[in-house]
Image (tube, rainbow, N blue to C red; front, side):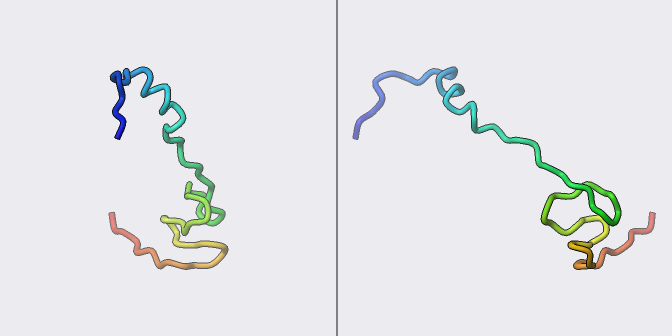
Length: 62
């Protein structure tokens, strides 16, 4: 099995991986409670998705 003849420098490695960085998550506004949520997911604050309640959310006493 062939081995590299020379060590790959940090700058060369980082140039090669420059497009692999993470991007920020896109957030949508929940139409019911107006909290930010991930698209196509149940809202974590009110438990609604697509106009109906999917998950019952317990209220916390503060």
